[in-house]
Image 1 (spheres, helix red, strand yellow):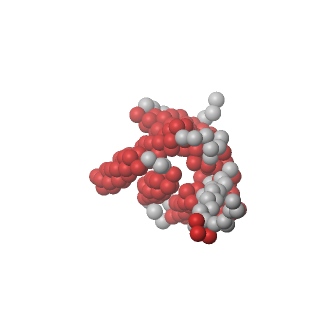
Image 2: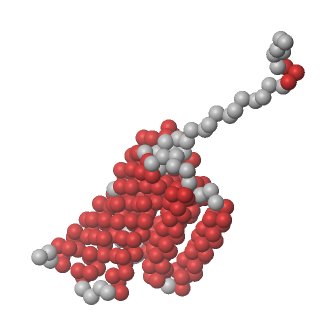
Image 3: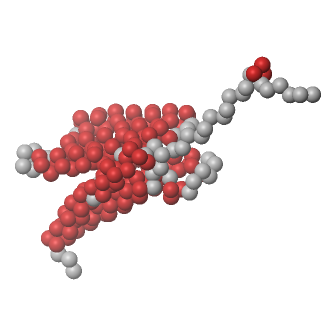
Length: 238
């Protein structure tokens, strides 16, 4: 049986591996960004830099210079909501759907600031939950649009579809893991929580990498030829 100390080490290593795994989609972004990405995927590719900046900053500043890493956790989740809102706004075609998600996003961001101002520890948990909820709503809205639209390509060759699947997996795994806070009794529960979060994060980064690998620049259909004015048309012989 794994001891408490061994499980704690395993969970710490799993979280570190999950954070470091952002390097894989980042390398794909650097390799393919200008040649193959549509505007929405190009905007999404900024996620790899956002994630890397917060991870590196947290590793450098905490705990050597800062007593807590809550600013990094809250800041990352807050910025992730804004970035994914901008990405999905580019691909969702229904104006009504975009307006509903705009209102939900603004409400979520304002409520996050309010809860964090009231209690920073509570704000961290609330920010994480709202990030999962709002981004899952984005993902389901896009997948519903894809299912009801014309079959232009297979779903698993659509980068935004892949990211949406990854986000749903990540949201489900993260919410399930942190729900254990209300049931945790021993260190085993706490450590297993971070193992689950790490697995969910690795799954999301895998889908993200696959999305960048399968991204293709959208082809613009050629414009139809302009009609020839009647006075310039070649006369016909009768």
